[in-house]
Length: 449
Image 1 (cartoon, one colour):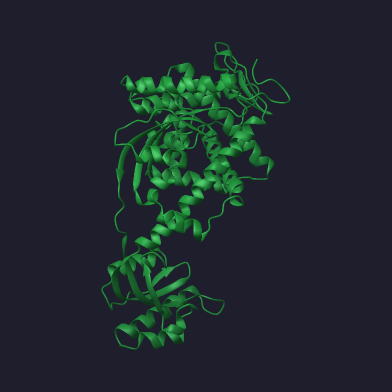
Image 2: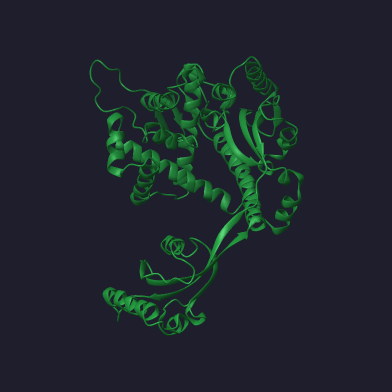
């Protein structure tokens, strides 16, 4: 359970504590006062926050500590994530993006559900090793950054039907899906020849380590500066068309288990590993044909009266064999189906809600369900039939639209983050963590001491 909770917080480079004050409250005499390790615009990151974030990563790899880079490298990676999180949260607040307590409460419930525990048990587990208030702040930051992402890409990404058609006909789309690993060695914006050479040398060092027997995931943790680095650089399964065009040709010519040499891309050097490849099958789904009668409470009909009326109609259908369609036209309050005798057409199981979907699965053809309650009122449902439908083409088109949109959104947000960092004032105060090659100089002050 601890691992699941920590993984959620680490996803997307978000394992962070609440916004820091300059000093922690009255520390015991035998403990040093907290200190500032970095400044990001008008915010600061404390040593205690960095320590907590590093400790969280170490807990993720407690069973495989050899996969972690040396402590100083790990601290640099985590601090970079902390800085980028702060910059994104600041930008979101500047744009008027706020997260309510209700939003955070809902996120807490989601985390609890994912870990198969109650929210109360989640709180007790978090408080065994930390602060629940800080845990909520971490979730609030995640939601804030997610909404910033949505805001940035919303008006910048559109997908046309012609783009979808072209993608569906492309060899890369027809090539199927690939499972990729990724190591990224970034080149900072405005980098000179020396900085580019340093990035290339680091990429070559990673390549040499992999050829020497280092596990690819361990190499990603050690060398990569991509957001997924501390997750081992695993990109999961994705269609070949979702791979950036600059690398698609290289991946298409690779065999499972093969690792690419460093590839130069727009933002740096990349090393890819092809873990596997597969062809998607036909997409067959079960569809239901049904009809319904909906009885709603209203100002003139109490909830109890609505329930009783639904029960009476059910009895008339089942015991008195009255015509379902006539009763639907006369009594159903569902405007979309009443005039058609309650006919709902053909649809996938949960298209009308999970309650109706569950009832349909349990019914036989022509069988009528007892009244069942949803937020809309009381439903009487009759299953008329089922069929298997091949939705491969429809699903493929939807996936293509999403793939194109995701690719465009990724590029838009990556450019946004690069600009955000390039224009930020970032000052790292610990000499061992300073990395001038990845911290462009600010116009208002130097990046490092």
